[in-house]
Image (cartoon, rainbow, N blue to C red; front, side, top):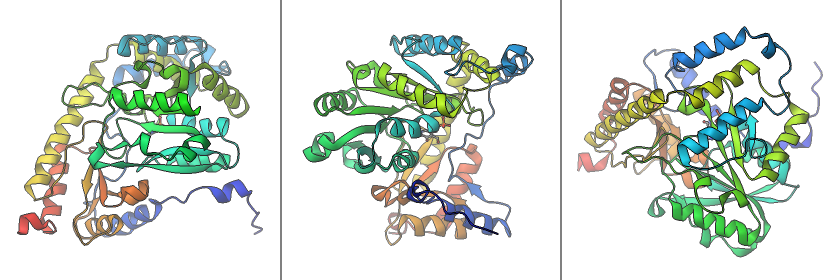
Length: 395
Ligand SMILES: Cc1ncc(COP(=O)(O)O)c(C=O)c1O
């Protein structure tokens, strides 16, 4: 069979770091049916029933069987605007400041295509969500990794970025609550990002995928709540996590009208919006009673508490994440993150994601997802404890 030569853009796409781990998991699965997979980021609980019912009802509406308006139904954009007003006290013009996305992932890739010419630079968190790299690679841009270090609460040292890099940068990606570190933002961090963005003419893209998932009574901060944010950037939100709707593929970009317009223009060439029934159900999710979201956050917090307690009990010196549904645990000495993940898979049949997969500064950590019930999380830590790899327990 003929093999066709792919375009240069395809060759620039970053390698899927986690593919090897997925392969190893499949291999171990052949002989064991007791793997506990805490390596991935797909919510384990179902979408609230009232949202599913709204989709069922909407599926019967012939209006939604037709093409939807290219940039999405106005009622959905109005719902997003009301949501921002209600949740954050932020006013958003539904006509010019909201774009409908096929999930935040799509928007995060599109924004690089909209604003980066070949060779242009984007600032990305390191460690960070790998899809930022994909969009930058498609656009032919280059990346500067902003290290997220424990001593700075996993915030980037924005003033430490060299001035020549800032002059070249066109985009800055930020993400809080953070995947993979579980850190949350502060107003100071966002204010500093806004100041820098003004000074160096950078567009800030705040990935707010875990917008509702903050622990210990702390509601995560929206970038748009900080003065001047809309002038320099946008925020992406998604229904994937807050409403367990990852398979539905719906999210939004909200903020600076010129950025929203660019995303919508690009999308006009790719898509004809999303199925109207999903848009109706999404509007319903945003505007209806939010008690399912509250319960979900409580569930993750209980899981976090159980996981951290169980990890500490086996001698693992870990910190509790403040938000998202990930814990960022240090790798014991003598292992790289990849070696440790492989070791846990082979010896304990527990899957975690090696930190290196999220960037150079992810080395030394593994990401553990809170996406299993408490009994499973405790069982996982129990199995890891039997390996006796934490010296402070042995010592
Ligand atoms: C940080 C971050 N951003 C964006 C996404 C993608 O969200 P969506 O399902 O809306 O595409 C994820 C999903 O794992 C994520 O962790």
